[in-house]
Image (cartoon, rainbow, N blue to C red):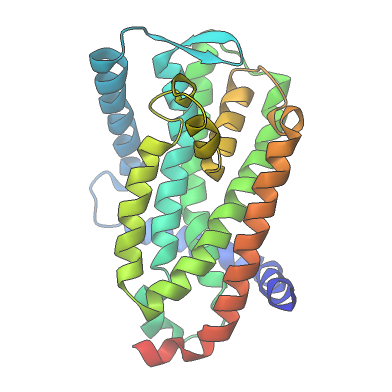
Length: 272
């Protein structure tokens, strides 16, 4: 527990640094593109159209999906879930290689190594916020107005960041020691796209498969986003047992990641 407190303290003491580095990371990443940061929005929108055409037009026989008893068009159901997936996937992948890809920089600069995954996640958060605003505008124009349930986005965004940070502490440490971890994570996360309720409803499966698939913490976050965008319920309150499970799992990841990070970070430079 001492390791967790130490890592959290490092984040709080370096919030200004994290913000500056995250903005620099975002700008430098798109510096060589003619359209610049516009590609951070164009790429996800193209992917959404592809998934909608394949799964909403090509495979599905009906265009409606169920959200807490409410029937909604597949395209809106898809957008409400995949906007979170883009953030989770990119932040987790970039976070997993954040330390070993910056070891030379670390040898010349003096700041806590645990800050590196944080500012990488924050750089992706700005993109997520922009995408979420675009989705909200589309929903607003399509008959799904802003509602009081949007307030739970504050909680859901915090929960998402905490989960990604906990996972990144683990994977960034392991990837620095064994580079194959990053490749394995990349393949695993691509599989998770189809094992999460993003492109199809898992309720169509027979038990115990839906219950097993709900062990995936992404299910909790995605359904929370949909509950907020469609204005159907206070998801984290109505499903309080699931909330306890999610935070229990996230805390386990965070504790394990913090202990692992503190234990090995003194030796990171040795892996240059």
